[in-house]
Amino acid sequence: MLERLISRYNGRLFTGLLLFALTGCGHLQVSGSLAVTAAPTRLAAIDRGAPVALDPAKRLLAFGRNGLRLLDRTTGSETLLSDAAPTALAWNPTGSRLAAAFGHGGSSRMILYGPDGTEASKTDVPGSVCAISWITGDDLLFAALETKPFSFGTDRREMLYRWNGSGTPIATLLGTTNVKPLTRSLFPWIVSSGLQLAVSPLGDEILYARFFDPPAFQPYFRIILRNLATGQEREIASISLDGGRAIFVDAETVLYGNGVEATYLVDPWESREIASFPLPGRTLAVSVRRIALDDRLFENNVEIAVFPGGSILGFAADGSGALILHKDTVYLLDGLAEQPRAPQLKPDSRQKLLQLRQWRSEGLITPGEYREMKERILTQ
Image 1 (cartoon, rainbow, N blue to C red):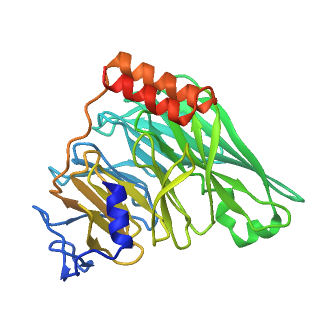
Image 2 (tube, helix red, strand yellow):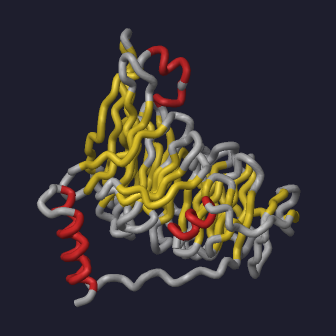
């Protein structure tokens, strides 16, 4: 579906736009032939750049505004969970836990909350937590940056933590780079943010952005695909510091924006470009049926909405709603009809597939052999 969407866009075979204002969105002007069963609504004012997270049931919105707040959409009640500003937020797949990261002196504090806002557990880690992703209902991954200044530059360590809500998180060093003094002066945020993290639908692989600052060249990020079980890594692409992103479209394909002028859909194992898209891809999100690319929303191969410049879009867990962040306000575009997701694999089939993916990461089987063996597993 996504390949057809992008190819059709590149061919300029999309319908003309109808300008209109979204009902309930205040002054948020949007262009596009948007057709949904419910109008977008304003949910809350947020601190500029603060994280937000909508639970799977679309009932609870966690967001940063003068601390961490929890909005119950059914009652309209708003609860202050913490006076500290969150750096990252994420609900688990069942909506039973909200993971929130906060700056805590020179380190970070990770807190798990229940849906009623009660604190369930917490842990501290060095550095600044930049991203959180759940891999199951109980286990989560979070990425953190540790920095240490020297006269010749700043040591930047990219760390990955795995935590189940109890005990000490398991730490893995992803990479380390010396940030040149000039780079730090031009991009001061590089020592506290910029570490991206995306988890595959099967929960066995991640995408992250590793920073490089060569002595005689411009700094850049490399998008790295890592198998969590084997630790083997594969470089997908290089992107600029202007804000490129990368996400999994499904378990086998990756969508990434170079942050400048183009976004690409690729098969990372055959180094094959499936399609390209003439937008920088500074923000990306996908559901089964739609793609949100920068400030644009697409459905069934048609661009259905263009939001004001600088808007950030994301989807609810089931794809039936889209969050829209614009300046200091978050909106919900609800009532989006979504296609059902593929049925869950049987436990034995899932385990066989995960083993194949481990072998592929280690080079023990070729991508072609992987496809053939995967097809046999899925048709059993």
